[in-house]
Image 1: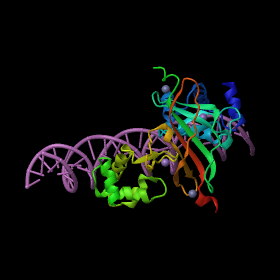
Image 2: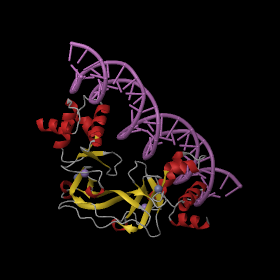
Image 3: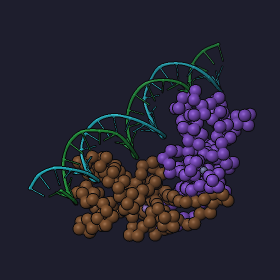
Image 4: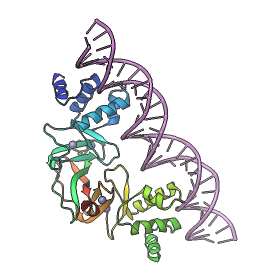
Length: 138
Length: 138
DNA sequence: TCGATAATGCACTTCCGTTGCATGTGATAA
DNA sequence: TTATCACATGCAACGGAAGTGCATTATCGA
Ligand SMILES: [Mn+2]
Ligand SMILES: [Mn+2]
Ligand SMILES: [Zn+2]
Ligand SMILES: [Zn+2]
């Protein structure tokens, strides 16, 4: 908890109880979480506050948003030294169609994609859908 | 128009005026279209009907749905012999962040993605974002 | 032509994301 | 310490898009 405070301060983000708890929640989760998951974990806190907390984290590159194709935005903590906005740092994501969980494959970088003449690639989103390791052996 | 009728009949889809028009609209468009685009093109037709028309097309593999990350589903006609449901047939999509248009790169197949031990890949969605050929030279 | 079946239109709902504004709280300077 | 101000929080409402129930209308086969 002490470490979290120092970390947030280093990003010039005010320390609040909610921010610490949300950060801790994200850190303990092994999978990407939706806003609804956070709302369920902190039922006494207003949705809007949690929404803006995550937005603040996102704007300061503490979390990155994941579009896994479900239509619901997911969030996961960035790795140390992660540059979500830099194209070369993009990793792929996996969405399990059985348990509905989404995970980062931070060590699997997206291969360089060639686009036709005249097109300029700035960003890539790659989501693999299937069965996760927990669901595949059922 | 005659060809369209024969095509829909071959898929056991009833011929209606709206279905013919929507199919023609999709065929003439070079880019993927959102439901809202179709609604704008056929203001006299109820949204729900257009919604269900596209759903019918999708269920019969006449169009495929595209998730380009904007949060709004796009649709495009399938190529001849396109198997949207088959993993090996998947092509990538390009979304222009300037003009907001989404296009199919039907000749660019998605490279085989390796996933960690225990995970089973069934489907892949790959969207490249950037500037399209019309917007890059401005 | 008639009846079964499917398509269409209208109203309504749900879900998620987002914003406006009033209130509370914590840092800072006088 | 106290006044002040910026920012965090809570509450309410809005918005777009997707989806559903049901009554009406059109289509097709018998
Ligand atoms: Mn990730
Ligand atoms: Mn396509
Ligand atoms: Zn799973
Ligand atoms: Zn463009």
